[in-house]
Length: 182
Image (tube, rainbow, N blue to C red):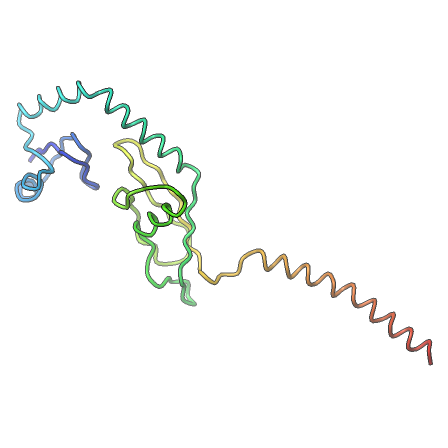
């Protein structure tokens, strides 16, 4: 059954796109919910005329989506999670958590346009953000342990070792003074 979509449906298609669906899905869900109409010959002609008239508006939407995608181009989202000893997280990192992390950074992205597999262990993952039909961004997601040691303590250890080496000669000098006094 051919349906003209009236709104974007992730996993199926985008607004004003003609998709082929199973008849039950079209009759029982898409059409009653107002998310699509049957793609009859007259409906297709009306769609083509509407798209022709709205070409400049569609191009503006695509440009706005591309601008938003360019803002997220070099962003890496790091999510700190509680982790067991084996590296498995307590809970999972999903689209909701990614949307919250992006919101904290000042990017307003709806969780519904983010697709990713749930991350259930420490490591690197990838989320796809669908801004428009052909405008998508692959966003790297790094899941780290909340209490994982950072590189900064390693630098402090090196600094701590340096004075210990300097103190050793001072101790030897003190021993020499005590032996000279005898």
